[in-house]
Image (tube, helix red, strand yellow):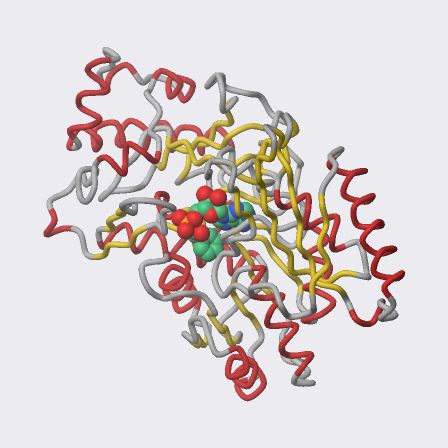
Length: 429
Ligand code: DLL
């Protein structure tokens, strides 16, 4: 159950002392970064001013744009000779964000992944197929080294060639897979087409994008796995920040390495347990690229649930990003809500695209979804019935009128990495 039992079950007072110690160390470490020297000076903060964990609230936030402004190495707190690896985030526009790792960072990161894998019962007897991008994306190498550390037999299959991936699962008797939930769905579809049962599989580790509990049920029944949510971001090493345990009710976050706050994304006010807001993290054990109060943009909440396996608060599944939250005619919509609704309707498939336009000054949302042939008679009247049903279900949940277009099965894009299902065209003429 435990990879690092001492740390994973540390009593609260001891953990808080460790966190405070590491926070003070982090404050010293960021003095090597010009951005922080200036910010802290402006705020009148000296390292000695941090006496309790709550004092973290005195520190300035760091946002993604700050990191972009520092491109490429402006946030490194160690000389380049000490940086042994670089990853970048995908970034939507312009330059990506660069993250650097020292040898110790890579060791810490692999240890965090090893904790996650062990927590869900994986051991050196497992055969692990890592179906994510092995390049600049942190998901590939991040999981790879953690899984090797546990002693699992690692298949670095990366992405692409889904039929070959399925053959490997069968031929090598793969027991655990890692990929994005959208790719897992595609894998399941192709396995069905190939009539290829994936009997050896027992565990699916899915993350890197928001997904719903309905998607979990769907993946579990199609792939025959127990599915776990895995959360992380490049700026905080990559995957391994928070992970579900076998309870699968919220994600354990590794408090010895990450100091967590939830804030109101608009006002910056710190929120309490059970209040949903933006996750802000101060990593406590990072050498190459320490950060203060990094605004992840991810929406979640902290809660105490008395889970017996680990101590400390959990975070809820991420429902979306503060910045990809769609505001349609004043109503907040997360793509994961749309997914949740569509998965409940058997007449449509699980692939969808969302287009947002502004027509005559009004926001219009169009959702394309594939028809499921098993529940469609082929008659035009039936098409109208299904379309009406989808519109109604979406309206009931989102409280929003949408346009629904039913499309041919297999006609919407499939994604190997993170799905890009939302196209917001409101800024375009
Ligand atoms: O996606 C790291 C990762 C790799 C996590 C593999 C899990 C598995 P980035 O490319 O920097 O890093 O993207 C980070 O992806 O801020 C979230 O918005 C989103 N994200 C990651 N995991 C989840 C999740 C990796 N489990 C950004 N649920 C984050 C919802 C997630 N969103």
